[in-house]
Length: 435
Image 1: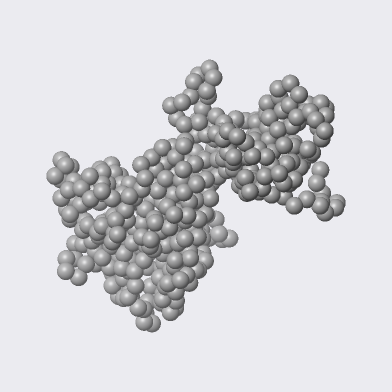
Image 2 (image 1 turned 45 degrees about the vertical axis):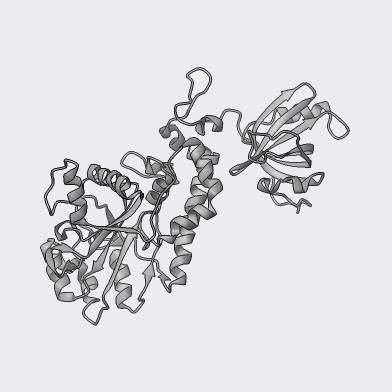
């Protein structure tokens, strides 16, 4: 048990840093036992650290006894060990490991934290591509089992790559906006009224009254605009930022290792985008759908199947996975959306799409208190419950616009995955509240 009784004289080297340049060096590594295989007087071990792994060898000789080989072979999978080893280059690449040009010759090994012998799932099964499973020999793991044992599933190379890329995407957005003069803000998560309307709201007990979980930081972002923070953003799992198109190029350049790792288990076509971004008006999108046989009204909102169909039509015609659909019908947008000055049936609002699925909904916001009041009443919203919001526009509010983008959806669609639970670290849905 490591209880910090003493400071160990060990400089730990990261697995990803194990390259031929470190050949013949004696180093320390802390990693998990991914697999082990004893054969005669030696034992091969694969050590894993996050999405990187390296082959190691314990062999009877000057620095290792038979007992040490047996000890290493009996260490349970997923246990954390410290090993002192010499880095050796190999004549033939070790294809099964990320560090293919070296292996470690272990001289000492210590168990830091031992895993129980029976794991709820095997990591090699959890990363096997769909369709490669064999009922007798090559099992795969279904999604519910992965999510029920999320801590183990998050150790897989695929999950590690997904969430490291997602973290990088968030940082790219944040860095871009900060450089453009934006201020990051934190907004209330419980509010006095349902901010978006509709049935999907969550009521919570709040002392002697009731409150609602905030569906969006939208109203508070606008109130900050009225308070002379002219550019603001906030970061959350499903809401956040205006999307700079340069994000796509930066992601491709910065996260090739993670993209390739995910593609091994979930192959997908590379994400395509145009510069400048393709912009279509809503009426153009409806015309494309009608030409493909879809029957829909001019002011009807896009259904999910029609959004996906339009994405395929756009890809066929323009060869892009990313586009903006502008000038939505006013009837299908929230009360704070600015009407189109040239056609009151439409609005100054837009959605952004990746691979045929919406990732952002945005608009110019109403910044006039009188018009905002009229629009709220039109949507049957209790004015008393949004009084503070409307009042913030009575003392001079600049014209402004914005939107909210879903980080988990962006990650899912960029990587070509098919379920947002794969890109939500601990997902919540109507049937899942744990872990």
